[in-house]
Structure formats: C-alpha cells, structure tokens
Image 1 (tube, protein in one colour):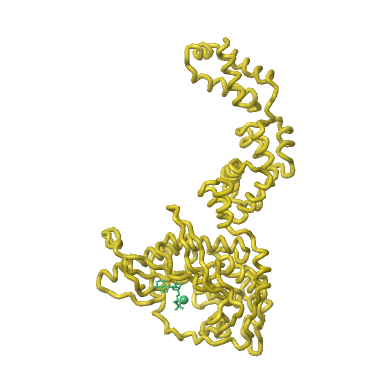
Image 2: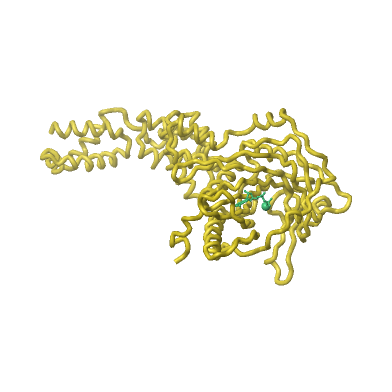
Length: 489
Ligand code: ADP
Ligand code: MG
C-alpha cells in the first residue's frame, strides 16, 4: 500500500509555484533582425548578433515589449515604467554569447493575479510574483546523432516572457487550470501560439509539501521543462507522493532540480541546488534602461480584445448560458469570436449556443478542423436559427438537411438554400391534411386501436406523415390536426 492510499497523505498540504515560459510570436528576435519563426532548417536564422560575435550590439524589439505589456495587463499586473536588462551568465554549447539577456532587478510586470475555475465550481485567484522578458537559448539535440550532440541556434535570441507565480497552488488541478488559463490568455492576446508540444509554452513546477496547519513552507524541488498540462499534473502528483514518503520515513527534502520522465511518470535528479549567485547577474551594459509611459500603456489597453473571463461573465449573467456552455465557448478564442459575431445577428442565445455546441462542434470534430476554417458564416447560421424560430422549417430538417447543405454551399443564405432544396414547411393546411389523410388510409387498423384508447399509435402516424412530407410540416400543428381527424373518425 502506498503512503497515499494509506491516508497518510491527508496530513500533508501540497504547495506549488509555477514558472511559465511563453515564446512571443514576434517576427524577429529579441535583439536582432533574425527571423524568430519556428520550423526552418537548422541554423538558418543566425546572424552575428544571434551568434554573439564580438562587436555586435543588441537592439530591443519593440513588439516583444508590447506583447509582454499586453500579457501583464491581462494578468492584472503593475507595469514597471522603468525596465532594466541583466546578463545571466552560464556556459552551454547552445549559448554562444555565454550569457542570456534577461531582466532581474526591474522586470516589466510586477504582482497581478489570474482567476482559475475548478471542477467543483470554486474560483481562486493565483497571485503572480512578476513577469520578465528574456531571450531564449539555442537548442541542443542529444538524440539525433550516434556520437555527437547537435546544436541549432535558430532559437537563440527568440523573445520569451517568464511568468512566475507565488507558491499559491494547492493541487495539481489548480496548477493545470492555471496553465490552461495562461494558454488561453496568450492565444486571445495573440502574443504566443500557446503550443506546449512545440515548446512555445514551457513550464517548470516548484513543488513542496508541509504538514497541514503549518505556516512555513517546506523545501521545494523544481521540475524542469514540462511540455504538456497533463505532464505538469503528473509530475506534481508524483512529487507529492515522493516527498511525503521521504518525510514520513524520517528523511529530508533536498532542494534539487528534477527531470520528469513522461514514460514512467517519475522524477529524477538533474542537478542539486545551484548557489544563489551562480549566474552572476549584472546589468546589461549594451542596453539602456527602457522607459515606458502611461500614454503607451493606455494605447495598448485600448486595443486589447475582450478577455475570456469577461466573456464568461457576460455569457453566464447577461445571456443566461450555463457555466459549462460559457466555459466551452470561451475556451477557444476563435470559437468565442464566432459566437460573438453570431449573437450580433440573433438574440436567440440558447439556440445559438445549441447549434454551436452541437452541430458545429461535431462537424469540426469530424473533420478535425478549426472554426476559423468553417464554411458557414455566422450570419448564415443566424438565418437558419431564424427560420426554425419562425416555423419555416423544423429543427430536424434544419440539422439534417439544411445545415449540411449550407456547409457545402458557402455564400448561399439559409432561406435561398431551403427554397432550393424545397425544405420549407407548407403553411397551407390543405397540404398537411392531404398527408394526414394518406396516413390514416394506410393504417385503418391503427385508427381502430387509437379509438380504443391506444394513444401511442399517434407516433406511428406522425412518423409516416413526416416521411411522406419529407419533414416539410410543422410537427406541432400537424399533431393537433391529426388528433382532430382521428377523434372525428
Ligand atoms: P528562484 O529565484 O531561486 O528560482 P523564487 O523564490 O523566485 O526562486 O521562486 C521560484 C518559484 O518557486 C516561484 O514560482 C515560487 O512561487 C516557487 N516557490 C518558492 N518557494 C516554494 C515552495 N516552498 N514550494 C513551492 N513553490 C515554491
Ligand atoms: Mg527558478
């Protein structure tokens, strides 16, 4: 039996702080004009600045600053108007300069918080310690060649922001939700593609445990370079159990840097705690401090899109959507954007939600595509909703016939398409009664059963009428007329 299944884990509290690196989607690098694009051949994007040749000088990328400020504002941080850069010195083959330019004493953002929603409906604010800007190092590949390590310097100098939280998270769920919120924000703001598999978003997790009720934090371990939300959560769960086990057996937690093995789900020691002054940070002599002003911040704030949390509030309060629906719609920026446009064309929010969460989502899933590529304009979908609402077409015909036809005929309005396919409900009572008469004539014995009190046969008549009319009837009205006819027999 493990410590946790024995219930001993219940005595302990988990404490987690995250350091999240987001690669900014600027066109060029932090301090040079090299392309910052991902996916080029090895060492294609390397000019003398990226290579750190003697005599080259860094020049700050304006866009990187703007993106960092955007993220800071979205996380409710205070933006530092006076920024300084620092050198973080270390030797590694993928760091030709021998140092990374980063921020130390005066980072771009201070404080702030991010709201996370947990499965039980509880919300919690996770405090941010600070966000700083830095440049990425190159990439070392140790598994591409049988004897040598290979170096690709395309990534050297690509701009990053590092979001450092306070040790505020108390479960792997909270950590996962925090990361998912950060990914949502960078995508809404268009400052990073948020792709964890490709390494645009990376996370180090600092994990410690302490006895419940204790105020002092325990010694922490830092698990490096986790490349999916799932793995962050697995590493946290593994560490909790490992650390509790050690303490319960009278041991002591050493403040180590750990590696996570996704195959085994276990952590191992990468290196023991470096001394605090290991990196010998000092002010970057080649860059002057960066001075921002309020006017600049106001301009960025003015151009910021509505953020997921504000949309969520609007959907659950003003539009009456369920927490679940609002959560799904706001999870993806493009999805939310589509919905926002859709509700400018229809005020049947419930129907708009149902169509989006049902037919549209399953179409996208089936085709493994994004809503950005959907061949159905929001105004066309709104037109379809209007036709159902006004009884021109019934729901089932709308989803089984009109919706698929509209997907294939981009540019046609719902009304045009319905008329072309002859799907409109006949408003003529004579037409409806012809279908009713035919059905009654076809099943005389069922008519008798109905008269003997077997009301269940109504379904059979309705099915027959639906079939023969090809769904072009108003089911409610027809049902009433059918009952009238049967009672009159
Ligand atoms: P350093 O600068 O040495 O990396 P910091 O004190 O700035 O250390 O913390 C880095 C990260 O570790 C932050 O996200 C912080 O919340 C987290 N952290 C600090 N102490 C603990 C702890 N005892 N348990 C869990 N996380 C911690
Ligand atoms: Mg750290």
